[in-house]
Every structure is written in C-alpha cells, then in structure tokens.
Length: 88
Image (tube, rainbow, N blue to C red; front, side, top):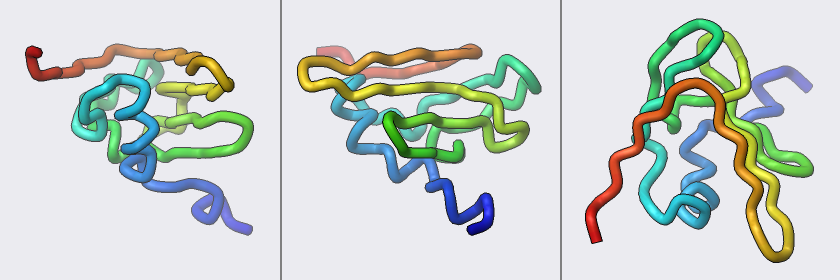
C-alpha cells in the first residue's frame, strides 16, 4: 500500500468537522506551524484510525487531531487558523 492509499482528501472529513464546529470547515484556512503554508482545510490530507488527523499538504505536519468518544470530541489544533462562521 502506498502513502497515497492511506489518506483521504480533507473534504472527506466535512461531516465530522461540521459536527464538531457546527459550521462549514473545509474552506477554513490553516497556516502550518512548520512550513508556514496557508491552505484550506479541504486541501489537507486526512488520516483515520483511532481518531482523525489532518496533515499539512505541503510538509505533512499535524494540523488537527480529533478523537471521538461516546460523550464528546477531543480536538487539538496546531498552527494558525482562520474560521469564518455565520452569526446566529
């Protein structure tokens, strides 16, 4: 199995991200803490196993980790994020 077979496009995580953040997140911008690449969350590489990990499409550094438990989500963000949410 190649590295490309192990990951999904970040857009594949749209449902989980919407559940956690209650807004469209694939267009949110993340600036990588390692290489300073600025890219939409949908462009990141998504890896799923015991949790979900989004990695920078340029250098592979971790941008976001989400662990799903029965009663909550545990979210860890790295780097800089710009999230635009509609007002309620």
